[in-house]
Image 1 (spheres, rainbow, N blue to C red):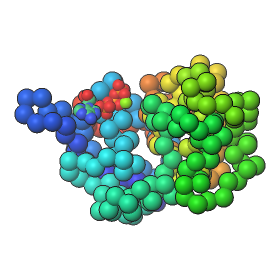
Image 2 (spheres, helix red, strand yellow):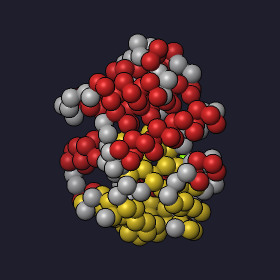
Image 3 (cartoon, rainbow, N blue to C red):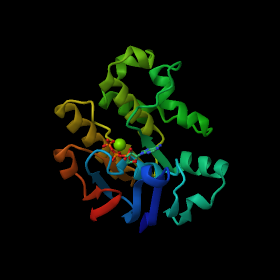
Image 4 (cartoon, rainbow, N blue to C red):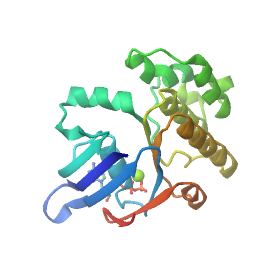
Length: 222
Ligand SMILES: Nc1ncnc2c1ncn2[C@@H]1O[C@H](COP(=O)(O)OP(=O)(O)OP(=O)(O)O)[C@@H](O)[C@H]1O
Ligand SMILES: [Mg+2]
């Protein structure tokens, strides 16, 4: 079953001579449960694509269908709710809330949606990510790699149907990266999650079911 699909997706920034075609006609289908790695050089359009897949930003033209629904046909408020229920994000910049503790950051998306925290599961994620001793700290008291792990824990905590991750292991050493990826794969299988992950790391890309390469806003291998 196709869970994520783009049709002739375009995102242009600016106009005239300075116009940037960040995405220039992307057709991509992703199956439920698939783990897809997105690779490409800096500026090729990877983050832009991930943002569109998650409905964070509206395209210039084209469609994104998530679980059978044309997401940009939704009004902003409905789109926000849909996103919160279905999609977990790990951003390139971690987007942690500075005034909330690590624990509060991790469970925030669940609470925003009025859900109940599955304590045992969240504790398991926290332990696997090695964050047990940091739960009471604020984000600015953590190292970059620790903040990255908090962002991953927060995305996994809601058990989203779709996990979109932008360089989730970019600040981690290779051993920790492998562990984190291992956890993401296991939870992915356990909860039938679909994972789309941007990575520059060849070893991590090789762990995916499929590698999608982007150049100048277009998919060159599929
Ligand atoms: N808000 C914006 N306004 C103008 N141009 C933008 C904007 N966001 C991205 N771009 C441009 O769109 C292109 C694609 O950017 P994008 O962030 O998707 O690249 P990327 O593949 O994620 O790169 P990296 O590996 O460096 O993160 C780049 O040329 C970038 O400068
Ligand atoms: Mg990027």
